[in-house]
Each structure stands twice: as C-alpha cells, then as structure tokens.
Length: 226
Ligand SMILES: N[C@@H](CCC(=O)N[C@@H](CS)C(=O)NCC(=O)O)C(=O)O
Image (cartoon, rainbow, N blue to C red; front, side, top):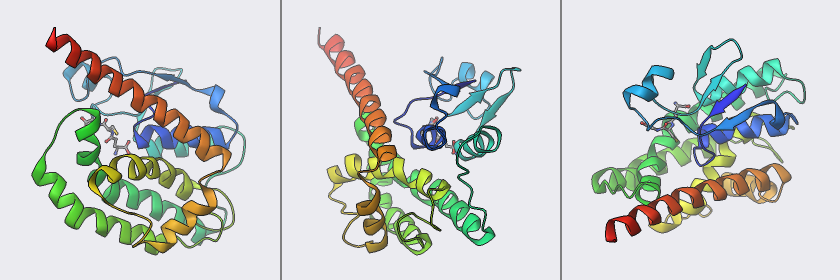
C-alpha cells in the first residue's frame, strides 16, 4: 500500500502514528504527491486534491486522514487504537473530529506563512483571536484521560493531537501563542507524553519534512535572485 503525502501534514502524520503504534510502519510506503495540491492532476487521483490518500493494491483510493487511519487500524494487526469501551471510543472520536473541524483549519493560515510564504493577514487575525482559542477550549474539555488523552491506553485521541502539537510548537510560537498557559489539561497531557517514543519519532519525521519545505523555499528564492 502507498500513502501519498508528507509528514508535515498533521493528517498524514496521524496515519503514520497509527501505523507506528501498531508496529506496522513497514506495511505502507510514504510517497510524495505527484502533483500540486488542488490541481486537475491531483484531483484526478483524489477528488479533493488534498493529502493524505491511500492507494490500495487493487487501485482503490481512500482519502481523509482519520478514515485511512481507522481502515489501517481495522485491517492490520497490533494494538487497537479505538478503545473497546464505547464511551472512551466516543471520546477518542470526538477529539479526532474536533481537531479536524475546529483546530486544523485555524493553524493552517499560520503554518502557510512559513511553509508556503503565504500571509493572509485577515485569516491569521481571525484564527488568533477567535478560531484557535475556541478550538483549544474544545480540546481542553475533551481530554479526559490521565496518562493518555482518553481512557487508559494510547488511542486515536492521542494520534490526532500529537501532530498538531508540532504545529503548535513550531508555528504558534511565531505568533506569540502559548498553548501551555491557558489550557492546563492539554498542557498536562503533553508533559506526560512529549518524550514518548511515538512522539519523538513523529516529531522527528515532521521536523525533517519541514526542513524539506524550507529548503525548497530557499532554493526558489536563490533561483529568483540569480
Ligand atoms: N479533511 C482532510 C484534510 C486534509 C488537508 O487539509 N490536507 C492539506 C495538507 S495539511 C492539503 O492537502 N491541503 C491542500 C489544499 O487544501 O489544497 C483530512 O482529514 O485528511
């Protein structure tokens, strides 16, 4: 199977974390997108034009990070990331859904200033003043576990949060947002998990992926200047 995307995308990275937690990283090959986001070429393979998408051996394409992660969780062996307790399962889904609906869209305009050199001041202001604090408030109310985000084992709740912590740490600090002061449950969860092997490997992949983008921007600037 081939997972198309880059680790800097938190949606791609959620899938990789799922595979890592199951000890199944070798089952899926990570491939760079063959065409730019949203172009007709990209849409011809995955209609949304976004990453990630999973190419199955029979040629079928699965899209949406959480859907892909759940499919791999269900079809590969290793620890189950969906808690068996229905309430814990609902809470893990709630965290993943909250990240997708309310958080990722707020960090995107901040990240784009660094990864693509696009600075949409209106979107940035709205995200910093309204969208992001609202999304973080939701995360804060949905974290209910002690060591982990929900229940007593690593779940999709943790897998959804970990890549966004990289974005919070790298991109929000450029805008003076401190996610550790106003959101104590998020901060306590991070303190307990930040040095885990899964987080270390995930953030290592994301840092390497960020460097790849920065190098591309530097090379384009150098070419323009010459
Ligand atoms: N809802 C999608 C979101 C995926 C997404 O937004 N991916 C970004 C990269 S982080 C993307 O492909 N952006 C390109 C675009 O929006 O055109 C998912 O959960 O997989």
